[in-house]
Length: 255
Image (cartoon, rainbow, N blue to C red):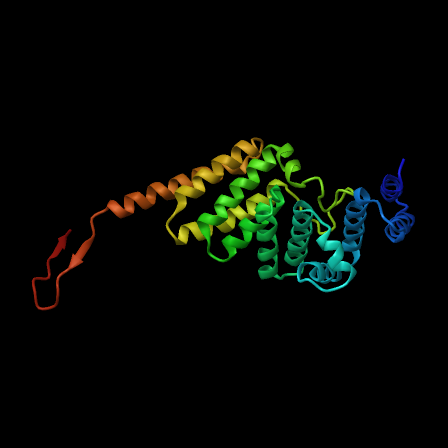
């Protein structure tokens, strides 16, 4: 068993301080093996995120914005897939500390480098919807659902480096449960109703029913949306009453 796996076992058996100390020693031992360098880095970032998420976010800023020195050399040694992992984590941390602009920029950059995970697309979708971008937001949520339904797909894009992979628990408490999707569905429905574009929401609900077939609330939501769409069509086709101008006949006419 190598030192990294030993640290993982220690951490998951509640020997957290010993696990952190072992990872720190592995990091400080030079030269580090190229195949170990990135996974040790990710494990340390993950464990620190449990305690000091804002500090970790600021630390990752150093990579993303090109601070000189050893950190920049570390960044330059990373593959595009590994850079995408760091950008993804930075985006999640930015969302956690309520910096949506930074979150959107980092998550978008991660996606452009090939990062393709259900959480990334759900967070991007939520950010788009919060800024009134309905169609783009729904497109991202559909991609999130597709990856959620076929979890093996995201392994092709570095998806094995996930926040929580080392400890077994996401340090920012982000999940991929039905409640997360229901929340974004509520936001999407409100936005779509204001834009009179509920048909796209209906299609999204159908996809969610396929993903979560045991969720009893989704068919009810679909029925409510169907009724709203039908009522909207009836209202648009109904005759409107027009009142004639003052001084003319008081009779009402229809058009």
